[in-house]
Image (tube, rainbow, N blue to C red; front, top):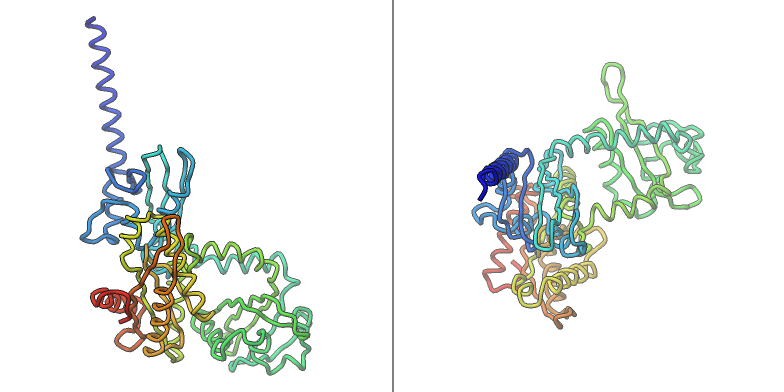
Length: 429
């Protein structure tokens, strides 16, 4: 071989090796988590930051499969990949994964999955917790400022005294609601609500939030004087004297029915699990934290029921993931047929669901859980792999002084669920 050719080949190998080392260095030092896996999620490479982001989710189990590692907080990712039919391209971009409950200090990851080939995926994880917290704090303020600047004519302005009764009126109130001055003065906010919209505690709760935060926004069905329903947005801000003494509240009410119709579809996407139609994990945490705070402040009862499909891995392994998806969908259908409108049924893991029952004590929660267990056991799930039967195990827990936080309730219901599994499954504990 020509010595010149040998030198060229050696230089090319050195260049290639140098580029490979540079790439590895970039991946290792990258400010985002980078994971390479096959189409089933089995990992063959990840950088240290990816491991750091995933470790709180997997604990001692280890990180072997990206879908299984994220199943407890983002079970929809596997469905995203399965439903992506193109040979290559972005499966999802900046999909938000709530690792912890969706409050102001929540841990939130942004997940992007790129299909490189029929057998190769690249997943990028980024911690966006601070960004999400800032968005939450700014969202309401920005929307109200924009609305006030662009559409002032659609607002009704009035004030409440310290007891929450209307003490002022102007023509904007009659323009929006139809109520005259004599029909408004002395009335509480409940005067504007559509009948049956709220339980009696909700109006004072609205004012309590405003007292604690300085202001509060509520959206609900309202009614005009002639009984016409409209979707109203109500801003309540605390009023004070120059010396800081509390004097009452300023109220801004507007009709946002048209905007609600447009926003409902978006809200459904943001609060609903992609596969099953149950509430999403993030939405559950939002609603549950607020409801627990209300019960602890105002009194009442609240229970959680944790539900897990029995032998679900065996269903996936023998009948396939599509059949497993049909099982999960059927569980949600059975739950929705049994539950009240105010109950929240959410998917919080791969085959794990949680039910929040406001106003239910321990005995009532156990009765509901047993009815749900029996309904699911009686169901027949039709799949391409044939008709399947499925059972579930359920664990119930009720809010108490010793179990007074969402995390405490979830831990306790998880322990009760484990007891149900240990007792032979298909039962309530």
